[in-house]
Image (cartoon, rainbow, N blue to C red; front, top):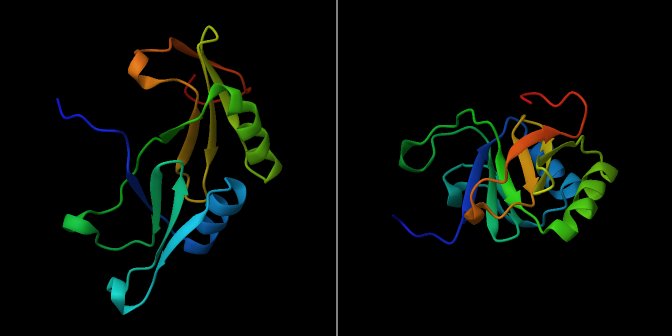
Length: 147
């Protein structure tokens, strides 16, 4: 087994860099920590935001490191403390994010899902993944797909 301390960096390919930057900094409230542009970055245009201890790169489509190309994924989850969950959800909603909520359990964990402008789904989850399964999901928000 490879031991890690968690996710250090995540990169998402975005169609509209300005819209993605606004979503991650204004709706989610993540600080902008770096901007890539110009010849020093071989023409790549990107911004980086910080979500706790995870750096999230928002890149315009281009050939990536080790010939990586963008792809489709379901979502990614960021850990939040149970006592902070309600404030996180209210903050995202107050800044224009459409949030779907799910409970795992009964009552073991809560998740909030919000889509960015490129339909990448960001999850804020209260579960400690080192504890195994939190139990079956139950939709809290009416119309949550997949449940």
